[in-house]
Amino acid sequence: MRQFPKPDGLHDVGSITHRMADATRPAHILSDWPDRELFFKLWYPANASMEATASDRERLWDQLRGRPDVPLPVRWMLATLKGVRSYTRPSAPYAHDVHSPRLVIYNHGLISFASENTSLAEALASHGFVVLGIEHVEQFSEWQLLNRQKPAEKRNAATAARLKTATPIERAQIALDYYRSAKNANQVVEARAADVTFALQHIDSIVERIPGFGETKPNTDEVAVVGLSLGGAVATEFAANNNRAAAIVNLDGGFFGSQQGRSIAAPYLMMYSSESEGMNDALLPEQARSITGPFTKHLNYHDIAIMMPFLRYAGVLGKAHASEFIQFRNHEVCRFLERGG
Image (tube, rainbow, N blue to C red; front, side, top):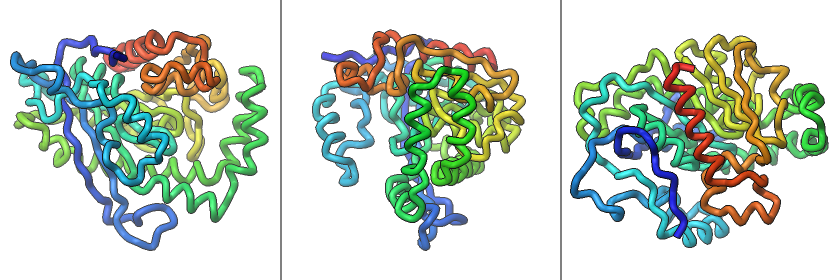
């Protein structure tokens, strides 16, 4: 049976989920209906339980099970993973010895889900962070309608193909035009950066749902923002417009949005896959640190790589050892954030 990476911090990991709607904005960018609904998942340091067993741990990506909007291929994938357990205990009591924890906000890819990188969230929580994953409930409808109205991303396909075959130096220049012409992705990134702001405005009411959280308050003056793929652009966009972003981690994401990364003063970690190395170099803040995962492709940064390593033979994953690379990714992100960038 496939094993999920065990977090290496001192704490056990608990989780809760919650939904909220931003009544000040429409359901999605092109909607006439009110209330932009968001799904939140939180991972946090939890007290160890002597009585806990493996069956008390959450099934991997459990939030997707039973949802009617989940496509058939994803349902098949979940069926093959039904025996895989994460190291998270739902609603476990908060660790009483972690005071004023640092908050990490995780932003997923273009069409994805809050717990796509559960192993990273668990690793961070085991090291004393509270991790908030944000998911826009109507993301798929929003993207469909945007592309139906303005199929800009389809016209951008030729530039995307050039990026794949370019050298790292060439990519940095080609990417400038690529990002600027991606009108739909830019709108989505700006909207999701506003979701991060909304979450921070309501963070006290969200985290108070954690069992045993009590009077503990997360440190919201120094928020770390992390994102995969388009989520990396969301983290960057938020940081460019909010001085509370104390550290940014971009996991093989682009620079969609306003492309104002140069204005970011906070520590910035850019983790490239081999096929996108150098792509953001013309837009990264000067203090950014870049790491390229050898022999990796984009999905090597997603937990699916360790659950379905056979995707390597379909050309979806690079030649890097999937599990070892995910553990390396988790270690680098934890170390970067623990050091304050």
